[in-house]
Image (cartoon, rainbow, N blue to C red):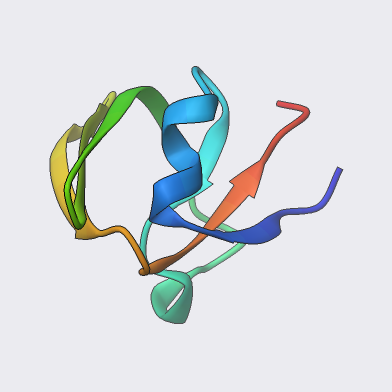
Length: 68
């Protein structure tokens, strides 16, 4: 399934799926990140991928492959 653009606030609903945290730098030839966890606190989403931790504004655009 292709990636779907959502906001970072949607990330807590998903686990272990493929994500792109910065859609502007997306390159389909690179291995995508896999979401380990995400939680929203106020206006920010904190979480981790297999490559490290992240903090994003809840309104930031992200790409999610919900079927992966």
